[in-house]
Structure formats: structure tokens, C-alpha cells
Image (cartoon, rainbow, N blue to C red):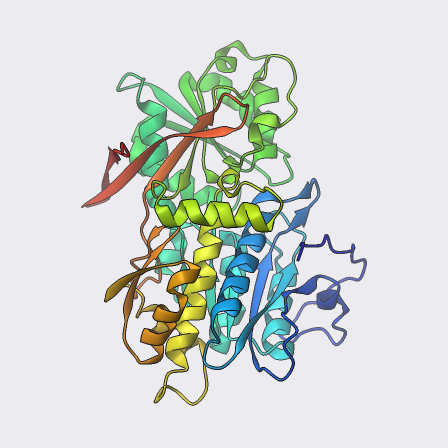
Length: 452
């Protein structure tokens, strides 16, 4: 089913550690996005909290992530029950910018999903909302599975093993961004970083700083765009040879406009992190002289596998030609739903815990990185579920790459893809890089050969 744009809410959300007496705030923002209508079959209730819409309209990445969750749900429910139950998802829209999250509203939505929908697992998208949700979910023993949360801070989050993510830490993205931004520069040339003020932006400033050292000059702005003009003006004096933007595609377009009439900046090569690396970025309206054609941007992701290519075809078939490749975390969301469903299969095994808790699901996620390798795709669902239901671990291969979860940090490593302008005006892939941790804060960035 299509993801509806939910109506505007005028009611003020009260603060506090209990959900507001009226649940209108949640019911007008949340909807069941998949319910197959099978009567008499018990359900596994799942929740999701995304910033689906904001002041400038729909968030492309969040919309694609929601669709990918729905596709995975449909495949899982069509193939086999999980522990004798069907999966059902309640998706909530904070209507906030992904870089800052929904704040108190997110906290209230977590409580509502736990207390009114009886969920034991919640999907989140970006770093801000993931950290906010964790403050409420973790004390309640509820598992969080983050899709696009890449902040380095999440690695050391005190979470009782309940916060997991399918996207890697930005410590690796910072290394890749620094590498591609300086490939054609002299060893002492400076790089200007313009970043949104948020856990995501601050994390990437830190990661880029570790890679660039004294070569980096950083300036920040707010998620609503305020401060962009001042940051760009400050960058005029940096004497940099490249610009890296950490923000979304609208902010990137504003930066392009702001630098267009500044000779010291207008011709510099432009790079961005995954927040702006969406398919429509090159179509953003910019004034004359503010072209985005030179943009190169990074996303987590392995080189395309057979599993990924089949996923892209199924996604397009279900959503009227929508191209999953034009949004950065579509495949990660798809993999995340499979991972949580498979964790339920392990938690509901014979001899397993009498009640499925977030801790039991975390134990199930830890069983997905060792054993027979099986791909995340419809044809392998029965075998994956069967093995986990028997208490046997498996090594899953996701559409985003091998999901080798670290059960101490709850995160999976990944290669990175680099994108630039294609012949059709859309983003096109121009290469892949692997990041090798060399210890003591040093990371080697190596090109990945994808020649058939």
C-alpha cells in the first residue's frame, strides 16, 4: 500500500515521562503500513519512528526507507509465519528534520508504541532520533534497530545491548570523504567543511578532523538553513581548495547558491556526505552560476550483488518504477526488517524465553553473523527461519552487503560508494571504497575493483 502523507497536527505535545493523556498526537501521526487482514492469526507488533515530512515537504530517504520496510514485510508474511505469527508495522511520522529529530515528540511516540501497541522493537532513521528514542526505549527493555543513524557516538552509547544499526559509523565515512576530497589536492591544501549542527554533523566534523588534521576548516549552520550564508562567508577566508557539505540536499543547494557570487569558492570542487546523496539532488533549483554538476557524494554500501539487483527490481515492481538506487539507505531498511524478523524467529524457538523481550531479540541478532551463509531474499526465508527456530545461527548476506554484526556495539561494517553526475542528470555510481582500520585512529581507504 502507498505511504500516505499524514494530516497536520495542531495540538501541543506535553512533556513528561508518561505519555500524554490524549493519544491524538500519536494516532494522527501513526498508521499501520502493512496489515494483511488475516483474521485469527496473532501478530508481532513492530514500530517505526521516522521524519517522513518536514517544512520543505517529504523526506525522500525516509519515504524510501518506509517503502523498503513494507516490501520486506510483504515478503516475510507471504512466505512463512515467524513463530506462528504475522508481522505488522506501525509507522510514525515526527514531521521533523532528520538532523535534529522530533525531541520530546519522539520520546512520547516511543512510549505510545510500547504502551499502546505493545512493541518490543522499533525502527529509527537518523542519529538524533535514535539517540532520543534510546533514552526512553532502553530503560523499558525495548530493542532499537537504526537504519540511517551513522553518528560515531552510537558506538559507545550505554544501551544494555539494545541499540543496533545496519549502517556503519561515520568514522569510516569521514575517512572516505577526506580521501576523495583531497585526491587531486596538494598535501598541504586546506578543505572547508560546512556542517549542520546535530549529532550527525558534529560526528562527521570530528571524523573528518581525524582524517584531515590541520587541513580542515569547519563552519556550522542550523537545520532550518539559518547560518548558511554566514558560514559560506566565513569560508571565503579559509583559502581552501575543496568544500565538503554535511547536511541534506536542500542545505547543499542553499550552499551552492551562497557561494556562486564568491570567486574564492564558486569554482571549488564540491563534496557531500550521505545526508545529501539522494537521487534528486542534482535537480534542486539553484541560481545561475550555482551548478551542482561537480558534486561527488558518499553513501554506505557494498558493490551491487545479485541479491541487491533483484531487490532493486522487486522494489520498482511494487512501487511503480521507483528506483531504490536513488536513495541512500533503501537497502539498509530492507535488511533491517529482515534482521529483526529473523531475531524473532530465534527468540520464539522451542525452549526459548517465555516472553519475547528486547534482550531476547538482541540475542537473536547476534545469531546472524556465523554459520551457513544465506541471502536476504524471498527464496531463502523458509531456510533462514527454520534454522533459527531450531536454535542454529546463520551468516546472512544482506542487499547492503555482509551484515557481520559486532554483538558488543550492535553495528555492522560496510564499504562505501561514491556518486556523481550521470548522463541523465541523476546520480550515478563512480566507484566503491573499503575502509581498513589500522589502529590508533588511522584508517586506510582502498578502491574496490568491481570489474566483472
